[in-house]
Image (cartoon, rainbow, N blue to C red; front, side):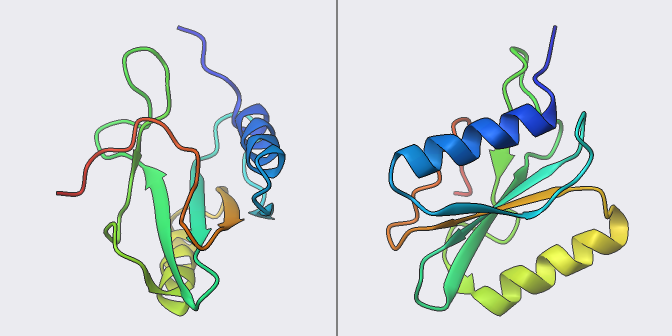
Amino acid sequence: MLRLKTKLWVQAHLRRCNDAGLPAMLLQKGNEDAGSVFVKSNFLNGTATIYGAAPGGAHDENGERRWSQPLGAHPRPEAEIDAYLERQRGYDPDFWVIEIEDSQGRVFLDNVLSED
């Protein structure tokens, strides 16, 4: 099964968000071929959520990325999200971070595992 290189997935996701009118920017560039990806959803009110690779495998049986919300689905203070990313940098500094600014929390991610 062929998986899309991380760099191409990130570029496509940034374009998808921007085409929908959502400001999305790359905060950190990681390994172009296989770096992990975090997506920060900034609600523009001092809170945010974070999405990362799902536990048990970042891809499903079809090669599609799987996502989870490691700090839960409810918005948290943005500083808490940033501190989480900083801790992740201590484990593996070679990851990507996309930030999407949207008061409704739209991130355009498929295959998000339920936190309930």
